[in-house]
Picture 1 (cartoon, rainbow, N blue to C red):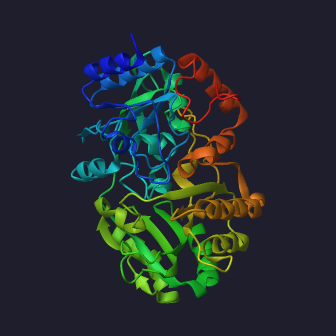
Picture 2: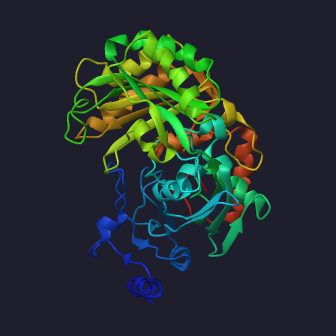
Picture 3: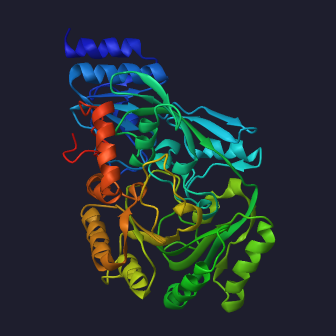
Length: 465
């Protein structure tokens, strides 16, 4: 049978679309949210069912092709090429809430948006991040540090079970009690290096109203705000997860008029404890009495509105990001953030630099998962917008310069895979796990994917094979 006949047979077998580069709809099906990345696989399968994923994996194995996985495409590790089959899972988006068990079971392509909405009907919430429209699977299996993290932990710690299509086409449900080594390896490595996750069950936290939002201060107050933030956040209760942010809002129509083309220092956060409105307001009132902000968006809100805290873009954009765990904050961190976002004289392609507060439940040990980089006190993230030729190089240079100058402050395991992509994610994966964890992950890879079918995810063996 010819390769074209094999593809035709695959298409006849699958419910969802099966496309080659010359087919109409190929580009649209391969496109992810982050427009800085493009995928050019030999075949793309837009899975409409678990069986479609099984057929795609078996087809790839039979043809000697690799398997790449994409749900929302917010980030990419190794882009799919002509030697791979791209499995797009975004149509596997079913959501089921069990309010009695306090769990959500979601499809492999679901974002947090419908999960949050459905869970909030029962006074519950998933441990999602600042942007609810990212994919639940990749976010959770890469760690997942959101606005509930210090109080309730990382998203990876809330994972209860996974349904996975393995390299040999088998479908297994894995948990700490069933195929525990597979569960352990998936929960921390990002997931797509060992199989295709078609379903995820996570624990939900009891969260209803929170006190959350942002205070905006002028850029020339950065040093004072930073100094106060370090002291304020260091004594904050675990119910408060907060961040210090410098954002240069681009002069584009998507940005609201009061922010457009201006740079601000921002204190963000979410208080999710009992009496959140009163206790959270008391903490933020310290800022208000210290210095009146230019804009004050902190308020009591249902956690269903948590996307309003960071106001991350919803529409697709070309972006580049990076992040590292830091052991502590000092003035050198502020200087590096300012240099990245507004330094070098001319216009900067950097959108923001943000330090998030770790500790609390983030550092709670969890032997059931392989995620290891959780002991840093602060997590610094850098994000730039790739708006034209040469811009990506400028962003990369600013990011590299930042990590070089902050090297003395990096945590022993600085790697946080959710905040990096592409070649940097591949390289940083070696610094996201301690040696014993790396060795155990390599053993899991050799056991579950001995032919390295899933070689577009984080490499789990020294050679990547």
